[in-house]
Image 1 (cartoon, rainbow, N blue to C red):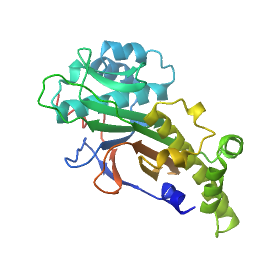
Image 2 (image 1 turned 45 degrees about the horizontal axis):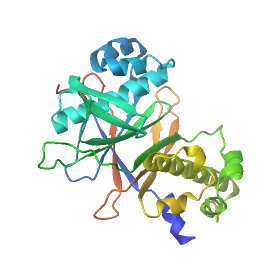
Image 3 (image 1 turned 60 degrees about the horizontal axis):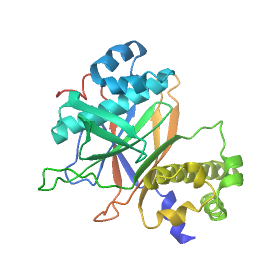
Image 4 (image 1 turned 180 degrees about the vertical axis):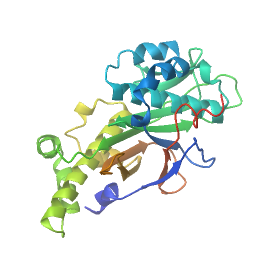
Length: 284
């Protein structure tokens, strides 16, 4: 199965930044932020300062602290990007889910702006992909549909995907995962097989967002066949948790789009290490 091996390779690169960087020649800008660093006592003030009233209504439905942190972080990152690099006024922007088009959109005064976005979050980590649309000569903006999906999953050492995989994964997917675990020790084989199962999951989740289909409808289908005509970049990321033990926490990421890329270069992930209320918003 040579054509499936690429889906398990590391096709993402990472670098850390205190501010919000943008690469002019990149096909998309992708950011990763640990929203767990937003202090609980700051939530109320930051929400009032950075969220539009419509966003605050959605935010109020989040009951868990982590869900609030993730929502706040994603909106600030998206609107800061649109403000600093696309010239929009931060306070005039609203990031809302379009139920009809089943995707996230950025609005200014009720009109979608020239920016495609997709997000994912897991255990406080927030992944944001942004693709600006090149403006045409005409004043009317038509935001053409785009296939863009991202997924981020914590590789839990306590939660195995074995049962889900045996019940739902396609036979070719299972075979490909087994190949990833060959020719190593038994202990390493189990770890590699588990990682491979998570890779299939992030591919399915990202694909579901990209082609706007419920994940339940794609669980039994062969994700490799769907992905062949698309641009797929996946990778593995580890972070050290705060505290005395400093244990590593691992995540799997997949990014899928129908963008025309000039080559098969890796997609770069900008890890944001700054503070949401200072380093990101140096320009307003």
